[in-house]
Image (cartoon, rainbow, N blue to C red; front, side, top):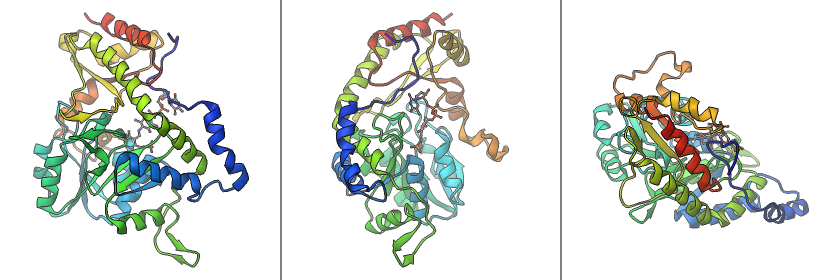
Length: 369
Ligand code: T4K
């Protein structure tokens, strides 16, 4: 049992395993710029995620931002505001306009029944988020995109290792972008990837993450520097060996939470689409003040007094960020507003002791009036 519990904690390999993995870097002195570890991790992830092609990046955000750039999109992108800053910022930093669609109140992914009403002659793409690792309605999104000739780029930052109907989540859409940040179920310290099908897109991504350089004499695009370095790739190689153990441990934590909380009046637990193999990335709970008695903020404060760190992922909605100066409406995303105001994500990581889960649940239930 721990004294202080944080919302998440990265899994790390044994130090000896990591040292063994990086020791040859002292021989080669090759530390970054698509070295051997980068290549090895890319190959292993391509196999693990069961995809035609994958490009690694310095973080999930750059994977997303450069994927939008590589697709040379112009105009409006339909997305959701119930997400991390990265999703919306990637759109805006590409000179594109986000058009915010509501989420559904079952799994908090994009409400597909509202997408077509937002399509205009300026719409170029849909950017849905597999939020908490919950699978979007990929089939309906594909039908809509085909009908209206739109690109689909999934923000799959939370969805590493998720399968839907037996198929890797990384296979859906024109591209799916993952985060391998320290807080994710698979981490490379910082890191990210884009999985895609079109070879030409891959060539552009490869260049854009390295300043747009094609060869020593040719710079073809205005790229960034978003290459994964060898130490991060080495961490990924180690963590990938233990990823199924990670998933199983997280599953046990989630099951323990559900045992305690699933029948508590006024709490709504995460609901996943059927036929989904989860990665147990997050444990969101939505509080209904009228039935639970205490609201989300009161519960957060009560837990903090017991040294239990929880987060309001995702509050505020990205559409209401101060940097946008009230530019976006929220009256057409009422579900997102409501969930965002009432959600807390409880601590979840592989090494969270089940006795700690018991303690967290008791602390939550104690708030009920
Ligand atoms: N799209 C979506 C939907 C995303 O959620 C994200 C990232 C992205 C795109 C972009 O991917 P990246 O570019 O980040 O790869 C954290 C993460 O930094 C961020 O990756 C993540 N989403 C977001 C949901 O959560 P913060 O600002 O909440 O992190 P922070 O520093 O408050 O850490 C949270 C907790 O994790 C701490 O209380 C303790 C623990 N922690 C954190 C770090 C960094 C550790 O134990 N060790 C650590 O090294 O954003």
